[in-house]
Length: 249
Length: 311
Ligand SMILES: Cc1cc2nc3c(=O)[nH]c(=O)nc-3n(C[C@H](O)[C@H](O)[C@H](O)COP(=O)(O)OP(=O)(O)OC[C@H]3O[C@@H](n4cnc5c(N)ncnc54)[C@H](O)[C@@H]3O)c2cc1C
Ligand SMILES: Nc1ncnc2c1ncn2[C@@H]1O[C@H](COP(=O)(O)O)[C@@H](O)[C@H]1O
Image (tube, rainbow over all chains, first blue to last red; front, side):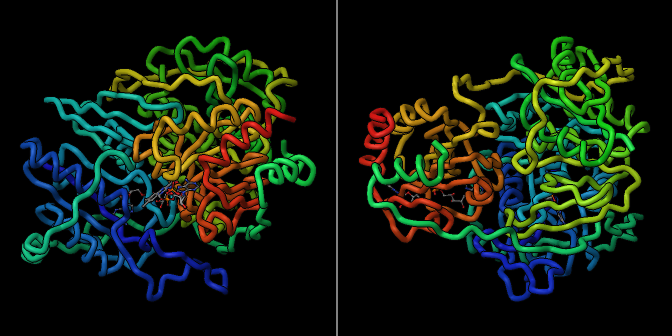
């Protein structure tokens, strides 16, 4: 079976982001960009399914500016077979991404699509669920375990009170949680090999999708700053301050 | 303009995050509440008591048990024509179901709102809460999840809304519930607790989390953890506080052996009072803590338990 893995290029999770002084957004000029951490987990899971003989081909898809090709190369170095870049300068929101992915899925006919549960830039946590809806497929979100058995896939999900296991009829959409696996580092030979793997480039119009955003960002502000408080010298002082000063216990 | 709020509940009633979602919906106009599931009569009675709810709709159907995404979304889409806004709390269920509803309605969802500006405009955190974005939706209908920590929940009692049956149409059978492994705890839920005590990698192992128990008992606190503590298997996943775990804003948050990574701060920095216990005085957590104690937690926790016991 074929697996599709959408991978997003985001500001690296180690970067301390800053709000632009004019309030128009986040400062991204000159900032280190990486693959969304949840998408690394998605690629890893797909590669493991291929290593187990469940999957036969892995296609990595990224959407956005031309540099998203680098994110696809990372996926190829981890073990994906080929890439698709949907190139656009439009601010892509989950609805547009889901529509573009649906158009690609209609052509590629994968049995499983594995996405990250959340992009760490927009923190929407929506694209996988929306893609499943548009395709009319089942969905297994926030997965911490995935087992393919014949015509179905069993997904253990991280939910508020613990874990929930569901069985999904294939084809299905899965989104990854942190504890699904630990993504591998690409080895140097695999990085070299990835350079020769093909990446097809297309535009949203080629897929018949209008990617215009539905949400307009009016402004971005800094969250209220917490100021560092005081150091206390002992547990007794801490308890006394929590009682008499902060009045929270 | 009428909003529909998908409620979550358990044997003890309507969950607090859902009551926060009702509070957010009240800022938009009339509020109807949906109670969906199998054998949910008692929950519907409780929903009818929520102040500010004008009507409760009940969808009682075995296919809706566990609120699996596919049937629950189908139900909400069928009900959508009567509503301008469809809301749920930003919980595992809300996040699973509402984007599916939005896509079926050709709407871009507005995830995890922290404030309502007007019927089209909302404030939501981005980049782990390092930016607050004010966004305006051009969609005719809004599909919204609500950051519970940002809205004071409505009370559990005080109202008396009429209860009506929602018509349940065709339910897609794409997925099946297999099992749930839910941890049973006498403690309050993380997102509802007035006091939260979280342990990090500094706790060293799961056994050491017992050092937190007597303090949590004394303060009626929920126990949480950093991702590092969960990944290392000290405590189960549902303890995780942070950007990609639970968002909490209690009156008192105590971080023990937690360094204070941005992803952790994202989940707790709106707490009223923050206490940090860490042996490294340079730990970033001290930059957001109201009270910082530089100490070895293996001394500090027993002392804290004893001090609270004493007075
Ligand atoms: C995509 C992504 C999502 C993430 N989401 C989350 C999230 O939701 N929540 C989250 O928490 N993290 C999250 N993280 C991880 C985050 O970046 C940090 O790695 C994590 O929060 C660190 O946990 P920690 O503070 O317990 O561990 P460490 O950073 O290792 O800190 C341990 C602290 O304990 C102190 N300590 C050690 N021994 C003692 C002692 N005896 N007494 C007192 N103090 C002691 C040390 O001084 C240190 O400050 C995420 C990361 C990524 C990439
Ligand atoms: N521009 C994009 N290109 C490729 N994949 C994306 C893109 N945006 C979102 N995704 C996928 O959707 C997941 C969830 O993103 P979000 O719904 O924005 O939080 C990500 O982890 C990716 O797998």
